[in-house]
Image (cartoon, rainbow, N blue to C red; front, top):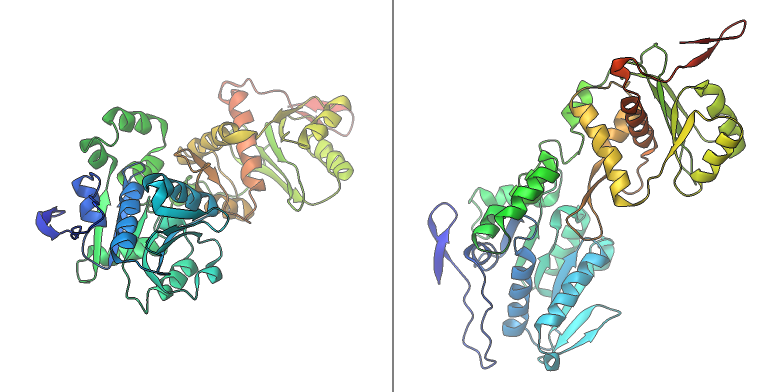
Length: 431
């Protein structure tokens, strides 16, 4: 079987051999066939969300297991985390007739009537992937799988010379899938094949609607839309603020008086961070420490001097805010980072301020935290959150985001900022 491949060439597609099972391949559109069912050993598919890459690869892996499997032959589906592997595990069970397999729910594998075993594994712990002989594999959301996990998986294909399908949404350029895709894209490697599937390809095939693409384009920031729906990797490695934009906002700390503070209060092993902006949106104060709550409250109230301040009141932070306000410090107001929407709303506000160069901040830990941020998919859905990688602090970013939100709310451009009390040798003055 041949189809018109990308670049108007004829592409040989793996056909289902004659079998006595009555198996026929489900309907798939040409882009799925071109990308997944090519005869190359390595197929790399950079694809839009909801473009059918997962369904296509489930069909491909099932065919490999049915047609080329046998007693104790292993076939793998590998995803970044266990929850994502569970999705494929569940869908594969739904696809097979119930009398054709047994499922082990705790170890996440399906054993077919012919003795073939299809495993659904997490790439979170690379060392757990070594040792087995694998006869075909799929790497799902490969841009989010660790390099070490790919190295481990590749070692399992050595003795069998088995084929592998590498699929995922693009996520910047600093990942092993991006490098593999570019190598395959050159066409110089006969055992490698590359295909890009965009949302428009999926819409043309009737998998999603054009209206859904238009709606996504209105909702998502351009950089997110291009990665999720057009399979175009960001030049800056997928940083939601934009590395270039961040660098353009770097400036020496202002010596002007503050009009708005943002405070992220330490929880567990994190830092208490206070960041203030002046009337022009420049960071003019920056404090960062680890201390007891009693000392933290005392230092916060002394530093703000009655200036308008926003504090993270999520969880136990609500108790701290209550202590501040009941002790007469009514200049503090709370912001709850509760759930996906409230976190993303304030981060989008910060992104706009950075990309429009409305604010400036000094070189150092603030810039380091901003540059570490990335896009994170929420609960295996299409929702995207701006967040720090696991294990990286985001205290400065949260504090800066709250300061920006309060700075905007005060309409500082119109001169309506809340008055700031500053100590003077005799009495207080209002700035």
